[in-house]
Length: 82
Image (cartoon, rainbow, N blue to C red; front, side):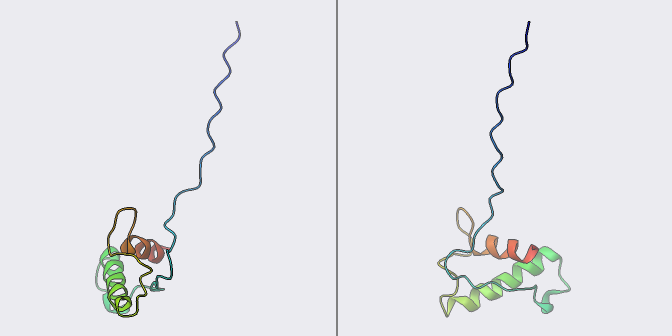
């Protein structure tokens, strides 16, 4: 008796990464004023400072701080993690 052929495995898709929608302005590095905090909190506070600065110039690319599917914080945090 022959063994049944294995069903073909679906190709794995590339991991989903949050693309920067529109023209969102993101910080390039964690702010030095937050170096005494844990890495996660330092990233969060750096992103929050940039988010609030962007509000005046509409530089958040239409993103809210937190929203379903990934808001500014998710995109910024991933950007700073590298």
